[in-house]
Each structure stands twice: as structure tokens, then as C-alpha cells.
Image (cartoon, rainbow, N blue to C red; front, side, top):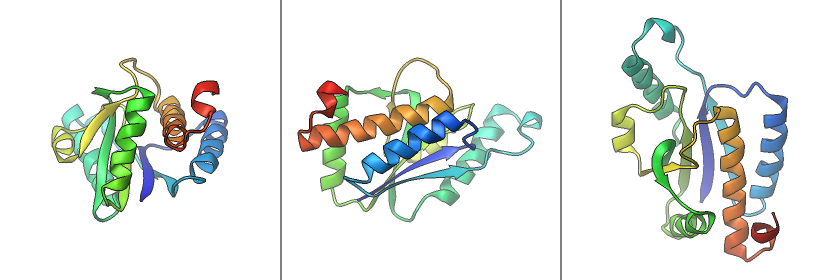
Length: 158
């Protein structure tokens, strides 16, 4: 199974890229993994929030690999412990799906139709944080889930 982190917007911070490069390298020891960026909606200031969400949803759909299982990352999603996430990942990996795509949306969240179309919505925290930091947090938790599944010491000492 391949895993992709699909994000709306470009990374503008060097420290974020450094952290992502490190976690990407670590994650790839366990599973094929990559990060794909989707451009945000142009001229969004002239649009309603609903229109921005709809246009972003269209951009996200275009970037999704064929027959992928889509998981939205959103503060209003279901929260899990690291151990629960690892068990959930194990189920996904053994389910026969070919491509699991985690999506970090734009500043205004996801459209309701994209929420309905997705496999599930997960939350990394109820706290609001920058999308740059969410990228790092997700990559770290994905790496942690793999070390838990392999019984490696990172989870307890990391």
C-alpha cells in the first residue's frame, strides 16, 4: 500500500521542509510515502467560504490517485491515541487497498460533499494550528504508527 499526504498550499518554511524530509525518509523504510501539494484557490477573497471550499474540493479530487481511500485531517474529526492510530493503520494496510491518501485542506476547511465522499475524518488535535505544523505532526504520527506496529522502541523513547 502506498501512502500520500495531500496538502492544499505550498510549504513556505525551511524548518518544516527539513522536518518533513527527515520523516519522509524514516517512513519510507516501512511503506511507500510521498507528499503532494495542491495549489490553493486563486482569487479566494472575492468568493464566499462555501465557494472556496467547493473549488478546493475540485482541486483535491483532481489530485487524488485512482481508486484511493481518502482520509481528511480536520480538527472536527475523530481523535485517536497513537496506539489506536497504529491499529487503524494496520487494518488499512491489511485491507487490500492500494493507495491511502491523507488530506490537509485549506484555511477554511473542507466542503461538506468532500467530507461525505471521504472514508473518514481524523483529528490530530482539537487545537487549531498552522497547516505547516500539521504536516509535521501528521508525518511524525505516521512514522510513530509504523514503529508501534514493528514493536520498535521509538514510541516509548521518542
